[in-house]
Amino acid sequence: MKELVGIAEQVAAKLIARKQTIAVAESSTGGLISASLLAVPGASAYFLGGAVVYTRDARRALMDISDEGMKSLGFRSSSEPYAKLLAEQMRRRFNCDWGLSETGAAGPTGNRYGDAAGHSCMAVAGPVADVMTLETASDDRFANMQVFAATALKLLLRKLEE
Picture 1: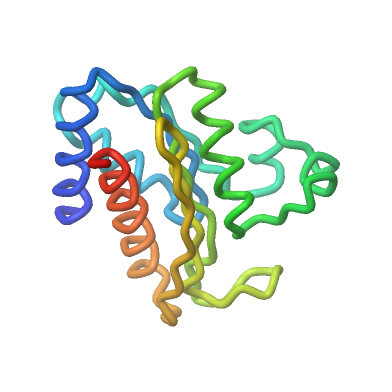
Picture 2 (picture 1 turned 45 degrees about the horizontal axis):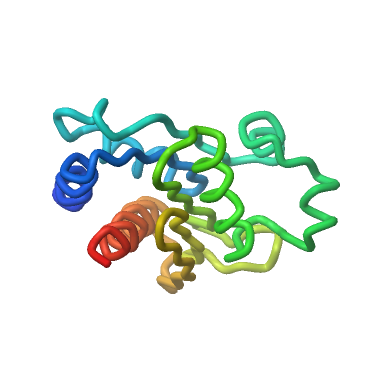
C-alpha cells in the first residue's frame, strides 16, 4: 500500500494545484485505487467518489449501464472500450475533471470472457484521455490487485503531466 500511496500523493498534489477533481470506478482492484487516493491528507479537495463495479448487478445499479446498453455498444467487461466507458461515466455522473477506471481479472483464474488472470484494462477520461491493457502473466490475486492499482494511478499521473 505504501507504493500506491506514494503515487497517489503525486496525483493529489497535481489535482490540488490545479483545483481539479476525480471520481473512480474500479473492479478487480477492489477499492485499492480509491483507498490510495483517500489515504492522502486533504483528499476531500479532489476526490468526489468511487465505486467498486465488480459484478453485473453493480454495473447496472452503480453505473446505470444496462445489459442491453452493453450489447448495443458491443462491449464486454475487462475490455478497453468498457474501461473507457466507466471512466467517462464517472466523470459525467460526478461532474468532475477526471474519471479513472479499472476492470480485469485478478486471479487466481481468468474471467468468463477468456481473459487470463493478470489481465486488466484501465482508462482515464478528462482534458486528455487514455486507455491501456496490462497483462502480468501472474495468477497471484493480491499482487495483481496491487499492480493494477499502481498502473492505473501511474496512467493518471502521466495524463496529469501532459
